[in-house]
Length: 278
Image 1: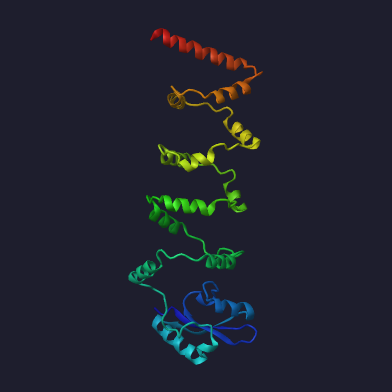
Image 2: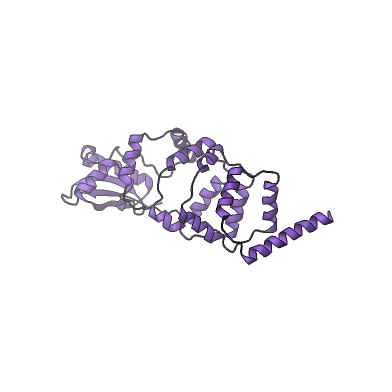
């Protein structure tokens, strides 16, 4: 297909050619994904794009790219190769080899710091389409994250505050019934890890958090099923003396409302009635 072209990148101030390339679509005008040498030159001198030849096949574009690089001399260009090799349309086998070569490799702390500094403040240029998201979701569905990976992820995020953007997105967001059901099914029967229990032990909630929890629960009543589960869980488990003392202190001087008294009276009567009939 004759959809390829060759192009020249010139310095905006001197009109000197500093890069020769081949591509299709808007490749000639794209500044992302260039070499560090190209980026330095672009930032210092600016950019003027000139199409050398168009309506070419990929093979013709490769050949002409080599000729142009040889003509302008690679020593005066930002091109890192003599051109003509291209990297479009990689075969599945080549992709598999590249992937296998990169598996297990990690960036050093120094490289990570450089990448972070280079990308700081940059706006995202690429938006993932709904179709791509669906493919990514399907590829990861059913995969179980190992304990090592969980620990690494936890350690990486520990102490990091959420960005204002993330907080704003989450604020006021309500989960759908379907989402709640999925979360409930995923967590059902899962025991809390020793580390999680240790992290929760002795944690004191702020007055603001307590007030929010209280406000969220006001007016809500437990279903008979939930009551039965709580009762079964606590049956035969003695309340520690420390907890009893706290409860006595919390209730000291408090008077029960008429509604509460009526509810207690009804509950006691029902209990005695069950025992009488048993």
